Amino acid sequence: MKFGITANPRIPSAMECATQVLAKLESKQEVLLESDLARALDRKGVPLAHMKADVMLAIGGDGTILRALQLSDSKVLGINSGSLGFLAEVNSDDMDRYLDQTIRGDYRVEERMRLKVTVDGERLFDCTNEAVVHTAQIAKIRTFEICLDDQVVERIRADGMIVATPTGSTSYSMSAGGPIVDPHVDAMIVTAIAPFKPASRPHVFPAASQVHVRLMKPKECLLVMDGQHESSLKGTEDVVLTASERRAKFIRFRNDFYRRVEEKLSRQ
Image (cartoon, rainbow, N blue to C red; front, side, top):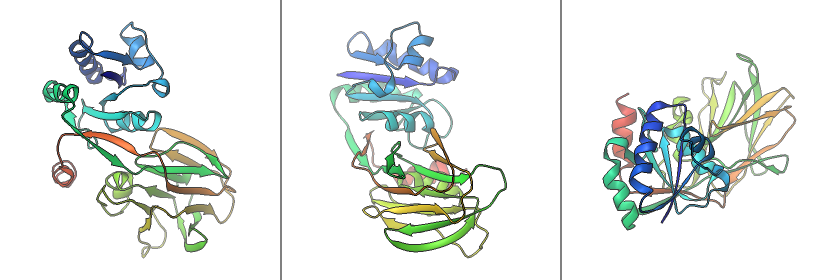
């Protein structure tokens, strides 16, 4: 089995965990290291987007896992070396036995919806969590038009708009008042950030539809994809979101989504 390893080399706990994983695997398995991590370990590495691995080990927090899913089509096993780690399947202190299970193939692959993001017809990065269009200046409100296919759903003044997957419904969307959606449902959740109209409520749309996010008056904005990549907008663009043909692939050993919600989110 060929493993890929990605971790943020600037985070000591992630580096410590990556070193332990490498020591466990490299004598018996083929292991590829992402370039930045490899440099920190004085090894040869491969850019994450070019890494062809059977299993990608994403060591760190949710940001590291999202980046691995965004740049790789491999199955991803998230190993939490930080605090929350909602998307991670394994904690660093019990990773040995789960790595053994992975080597034996004793796991299941959970596929989840990703968002396809296009701006004026140009495809950008797919998102496992969310795409966010927000104002480029702090405390500057904008009027957004939200369309479902060719129907205007709402025109709303807000600091920004979040279009999330069910996976992302427990992240930024939830903090802005959006619903928690079971990850087995394919849907898009559209939530306004700090809407001027108190009666504004989030919408849940079919994944097969197209959600259009436009500005009523051109003003500079930012499009942020999974918190990893930013694209500057002039405000004249048509940002279109729909389900991607590329699914996020998580390695799972348990079926415990609601336990995670209770333990990691409800008690924070």
